[in-house]
Image 1 (cartoon, one colour):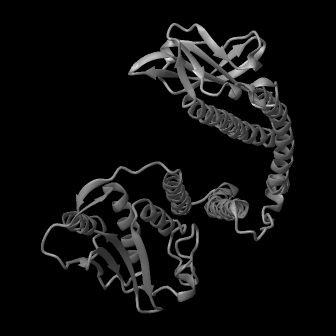
Image 2 (spheres, helix red, strand yellow):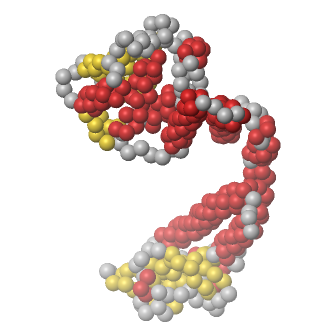
Image 3 (spheres, helix red, strand yellow):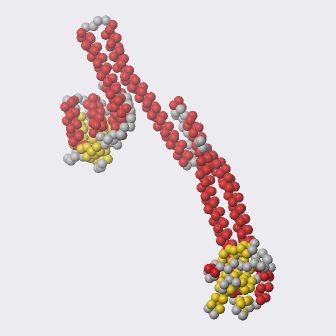
Length: 458
């Protein structure tokens, strides 16, 4: 059965408090008992010291010097805290005792004769605290002095204290549990409000947020974390909707062209040249859809969060081979300008890095003047390794430079140039750079070309 969180908090706190109170009560009882016993033992020691100097040997028997000492009120009456005295010989036989013992005798323990400690014994129906010391005559033990004091009042005091603590213990725990249960419920009330508000937020009202308490505590931190999560979810949902809309548009256009071309072809017989022209137009539409789908698949793989394996790569040799191969494949002039004369090793993924350079260089080749080369630079700026791709194209307006990495974004200059493309290349570049921990930046001015810079921290 599920237990409410406030119940679990109350139980844990009560259990912890129960142990603490138990220890405190045990300490209180122990301190009181030790104090009471110590006081009685001190009184016994004082009585023992007082009476041992008043004892002498008469005809082989031990007696008090002044017999009237036995007639003192404290030894003859059963008062509140009577003192009991008895003298025994070396074998433990009683030789004299105080009248208040009546027919009872104090217990003699030979093994404790010289310990100087007190212990609890019973004399008839009474509980006593007793002490005994040896009596010497010319260096020999002639007998023992036994001194005792009633322990019954102390026992009653300790028993009453114990009973009070035993009664108070469960009452305190029950009261604490109820109080902690209430306080725990009050403490988690803001969490209940957060839960209630969060349950009301759906896809249709994802713009709503949980009110921040302003208390600057863990509850506020939780609220801000949930609001940040909602912000990310809202942004991701908007991007998803925009991505779906843009992808549909990019695929719908070539499909419409393809459908229109085929409908025109079947309306009436055509010449061979007309058929070839329409077929070529259809193939171009298919190629456009294929390129768009391939880029969508690449972007989906990048966004899927699959880990990229990093490996050590010589960036200088990689760039040299890349530029050489690109020149052969495109038949365009691409100049490589290494600004270092030694290998540069870093951890990266070769295939992902090639996709990044392919998209950046292909964009430069697509929009730059064919009579002017694309420049690729490799160098180090302090501890930063960088690669720059520069072209002499129409440039990118400053307002569009922050949006060029959004999927399907194509600026006015791009649309006016009627160059083929779906606007996914730079989005793929940005995602891969984030995965490889590469910082990408762009500098561009209209009619002055563009410069894309990749940076690694060495």
